[in-house]
Amino acid sequence: MDEVLLAPGQPNHDIYLVLSGRLKVSIGADSLAQSVIIERGECVGELSIIDGKPVSASVIADSAARVLVIPDVVFWSQIIALPGSRAIC
Image (cartoon, rainbow, N blue to C red; front, top):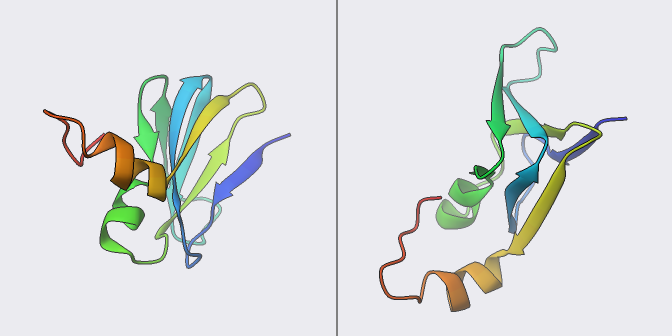
């Protein structure tokens, strides 16, 4: 069974880093919309925690996906503060 991680219009406070499996990202409410696949080593959610705006896309984890959830407070206080880090995943 697929799990919805992010839905359009909702607030977001996490970055989702794919450890294994994949995520499907679709923009808009149309169930026929083209999906973008996010694979191992890629992430989603960073834009909404950077700009503070609600989520604009639907993000669904396949049943076999393993995802590391990084709360925005950890991102801002520990990750972005590291020398050489950038605000883009």
